[in-house]
Image 1 (tube, rainbow, N blue to C red):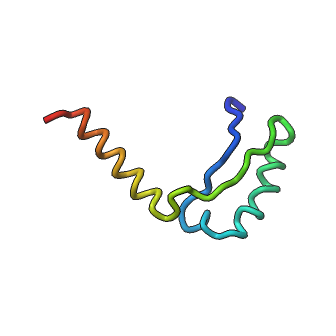
Image 2: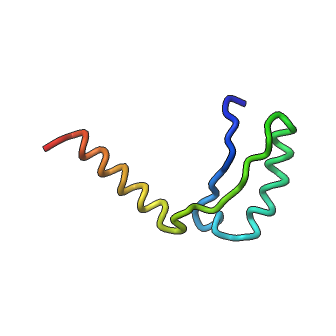
Length: 68
């Protein structure tokens, strides 16, 4: 594994389901197989607005790079 992340954000409609985190955690631990500590699974901090806000931030960055 190239990275050793401490946290994985599970977003979208699926990630918003509380029971999904409990289902994914053991599968993640199994796939990592002890190579690194199992990362924490968390919902997005901005809830269901994360995708829209991320897209707006990317659009604003692209517009700033283009200039007037």
